[in-house]
Image 1: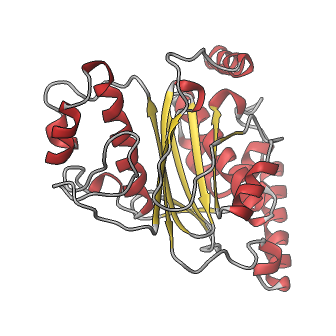
Image 2 (image 1 turned 180 degrees about the vertical axis):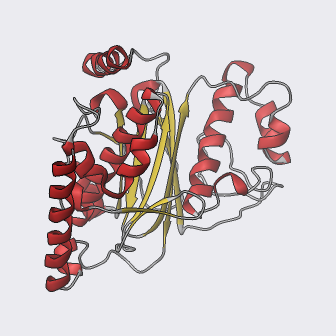
Image 3 (image 1 turned 90 degrees about the horizontal axis):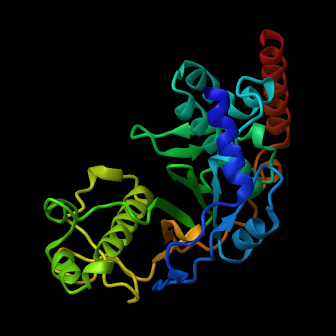
Length: 311
C-alpha cells in the first residue's frame, strides 16, 4: 500500500498537476517592497538560481513544490537519514506512510532552500523548533524561515531582512458555513465579505485566512493569536494588518502578498523588514569562525558515517 501511494504521488508530480479551475494570476498588493512570485522547485536539483537572486535583490524568497517531487526512492535509506539529521529519530517513530513521506519531503525542501540561503550543503543545515513548533535554523538567526503544507502542496519562505510567515490552503476549502466567519473574521471583515458576490465569497475568505496564518506565523503566534482580533482588507486593495474595526494596525515595515501557484492553492506571504538592511554575508563558512566550521563539518561527517554503519 505504501509503495503504491508513493508511486502515485511521483506520477502526479511528473504530470505537472491539474489544470486551472479558473483564470487569473494573483492578488498582490503589498504596502512595502514587492514580493517575488513563488518559485516552483521540482526536486533537489532545483532550479535554485532564482531563489538565490530573490534573496540577493529582495531579501526574501518563496518556493513551492509537490510532495511527489521530493519523495526519496527509499524512505529509509542512509541518504534520507543524512538529510534529516536530528529529525531522523522523530521520523523513525512515524507509522503513518503519508505523514512520514510528507515529513521527509518538507524537511528536505526546507533544508535545500535554507542551504541556498546560507551557501551550505543541505545535510549540514540543522533545524530547531520553538516551543510552539515553529522551525528555525540553528546558529543562523540572520535567516528566518517558514513552512506550510496542505494536501500534496508544499510552501517554504526565507528572508534575510527580518521575519517571514507563509501559509497555503486549497483554493476551494470551504470556510464559510455554519457561521464559522464569526470565529475567524473581525466585525469589519464580516461586513466586507457580505459585500462580495456569493460565488467569490468563500475564495475571499480563504485569502483572508491564509494572510492571517502567514502573519501570525511570522510573529511566532500561530493559532494562539485570535483571528477575530486582527484582519485584512478587500481583495485588490493595499494589504496591511487591520484592527477589528478596519483601521490600520501595521505600517510599511510589513509586506503581504497572495498568490495562486498551480491555480488550485491560495498561498500568502507576510514579511517583516527589521530595517537593518540585508546582512553583509549569510554564507555559513564566512559568518562563522573557520575553526568552528571545520569542527562542525567533521562532527556531521562522523555522525553520517555512524548512521550509515548502523543502517
